[in-house]
Amino acid sequence: MALLEIGRICFKRSGKNAGEKVIIVGFEGKQPIIEGIKAKRKKCNPRHLFPTVEKKEISNPSKEEIIKILKE
Image 1 (cartoon, rainbow, N blue to C red):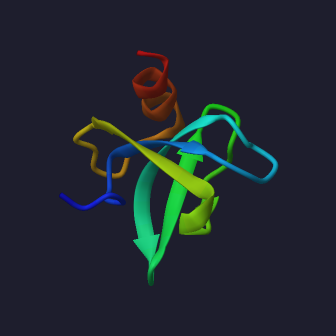
Image 2 (cartoon, rainbow, N blue to C red):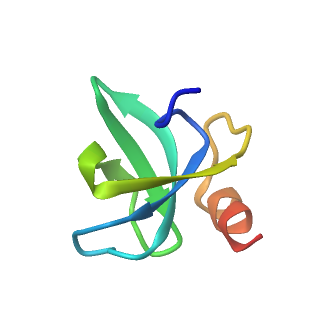
């Protein structure tokens, strides 16, 4: 099981959005691209993420879909 993969729900451990629930929507090189309810879609240092066991099947989701997934 890969810890950081597309669709994995994580918590931000540090930075502007520390403590917020985010989801990995893609990768640019080895850096995950995350998006959350308050967090914009952006690259993130993998060390700043705490992965959970939750994983959702997504493919190019919109902001509304991300919000719906994270509020569950």
